[in-house]
Amino acid sequence: MNEGLKEEAAATEPSRRSFLSKLWVGLGLVALAEVVAVVFAFLRSNKSKARGVASDAMVMAGTVDKFEPNSVTAFVRGRFYLARLEDGGFLALSRKCTHLGCTVPWVAKEKRFACPCHASAFDITGEVINSPAPRPLDIYPIFIENNVVKVDTGKPIKRDQFRTEQVRYP
Amino acid sequence: MAVVLVVLLFATGMMLQFAYQPVPDKAYESILHLQNDVFFGQLIRNIHHWSANVLLIVVFLHFLRVFFTGAFHAPRQFNWIIGLTMFVLILGSNFTGYLLPWDQLAFWAVTICTGMLEYIPLIGEGLKQIILGGTDLGSATLSNFFAIHTAIIPACLLLLLPFHFWRVRKAGGLVVPLSPEENPANKGEMVPTIPNLILRELVVAAVLIAFIMLLSVVYDAPLGARANPGLSPNPTKAPWYFAGLQELLLHIHPLFAFAVMPLIFAGILILLPYIPYDENTAGVWFASHRGRRMAIVASIIALVFTPILVLTDDLFFDFAAWLPGIPPIFSSGLLPVAMILAILGGFYALMKRKYSATKNETVQAVFVLLLFAFIILTITTVWFRGEGMALTWPWKV
Image 1 (cartoon, rainbow over the protein chains, first blue to last red):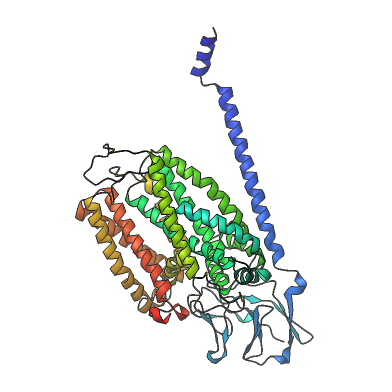
Image 2: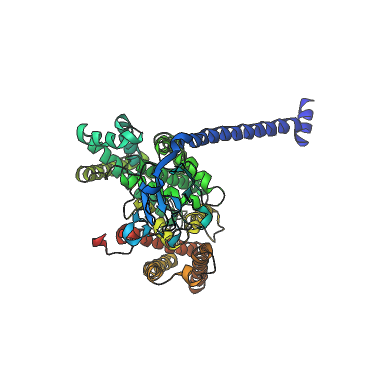
């Protein structure tokens, strides 16, 4: 009598067993997804704190008159250049080349930023003069208060081209 | 040989962990201390360095051997996938280890290699920030790379290596070399594994260890100046195993050179064992006599035309300037890639027709073409590019 029951059960695909198996697999996948999410969140949480608190991101560059028009001053600790254009306006340029991230030096003799890695070049406004850089140098927000130039190095701004609205006038 | 090298790397790696400090302020100095003040410190570091580089070459040669003897046909198809995975892990291990000395060489090579990630659409910026542990290369990056290099990749390798070997046993052992005329069913004379194979493997291991020792005693692992985030060296080159990729980047838009093309070639490599081949040529070097001839022809074509293409692109082509209205992603990205894929397709069709070849032989010919092209690209960046990544004679680099 038992063999008959077993045969019947096998012939009609034991539904309880297959349901439970599928349930296990489903729960297993959910558990796996949870593990992946936890690991991901763990690895990501590092980055937002790494940039530093707002207070040490703000750099006091100096009084407005310290900077000659048509000059570029490097700020090593802030990791940026303060460019003062011919018309007296200020631009705070990131020193990271927009191609692959090398530090671009300002070559005063040639009046341009020339990247040593793959020969990208930018002019005093950060615009691309020579490829392979895909876009102009990033800029940082400038605040001019009480005749002092302040740069917020915590907020780099990407741009696809130079526009006069980006320049800060004292 | 690969196993011997991995064992050396694990052993020297564990010893290095006693001396090395994975913090930017201390990393470089800990290596100086290791080399100058610790007995045999320099030797241990050198062994680690040379084992790592020789391992890449050994693993690559193994990959070539497996491909050319058709040892990826059934029932070895999945083992090919496991092997590819380990290859990627070993590359990852070399790359993460490269950063640890925190010298100028390490810092900037990793900067540009991670800089490339930005160009991947949608996920690129996020991916880069996860790997860097922030927006810039810093202490978070060092911690991440150290964890990957000393824990995650070794753990993965410890799991995959036995799996890889078990699959070989399951498939009945290594592929037996056959000449094209022989009948695969003829097994030939068999001898016991112990002592015959073991003895030969021990001899090879001994010779390899002696070779590594010789390299380590004579040549020191490189250590440049301490990392300076304010000064990018000129030129900045990726480690030699990524030099081919860097050369490609000089000619083609980063999205295509770094994401699209590697993805296509990785996809081809993964699918390689599963292509419906005309026959199972396991054991026969280069599949057949005709396959051998086609491979030679393909290699000559690659060796001649790749340098020509590199030169003309550097000195003459400037798609971005000739087509100023079109964004560079098309003129220096999509266009050259489309041209290359068209050339590959044409080559495949030509080979198939001219030689009335089987799929095995034609796929192999394309593989050889790409292989030699990549080797030429690697050689170009390593030996022929100097200041500003301009083409220079090797003795002036």
